[in-house]
Image (spheres, one colour):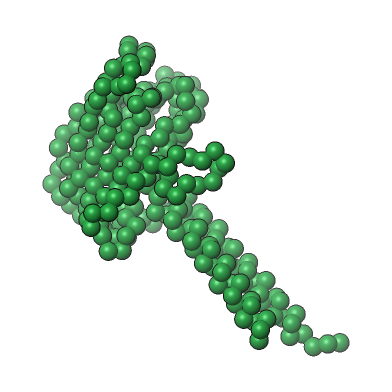
Length: 240
């Protein structure tokens, strides 16, 4: 019986570890898609899941890089949400093919809407021209809940490849594959007011990086169960 108890303890620990690794990955604020071509224009969505059982997300604040500013930024109106785009003076002018860029969008704030527990929302942005001298753009994001809690998704990617506790949404940039680099028409950064309120997007059912981790973790648990069952079988086998 002591062996059975030890095996059960190991199994419980493995399950807890798997769930602990998988669940946080599902709750991260991310940018979708996570990759775009250098020098081009792209449309992305900041995907914000609600990770609280007793509060709703009521505001999302995304900061834009000023070291690699974007000359053209526009937002897609989202029913039920008000949007405010802040354009500010850069620390120093940045040379672009359109001339020296002295001002750019530094922040976008969505408010007035609600992401309920078990739901997520995507906030779409068109932007460009993407820089050619960096392989990533980081967008620190603050997520505000109805009870006043603010989660700051601002941790930069770790150099050792491990995941930060609150990773900032990061857009990876890859060399252009060809063409004119204008996969999407650019637009100005002056958005219109959001439309009247509707029910937010329902809970996510599509696969994601976090889902893949969860499935991988489930496989680990199944493997541990198999080892335990096999060990018990050997334990109970009668002597020859």
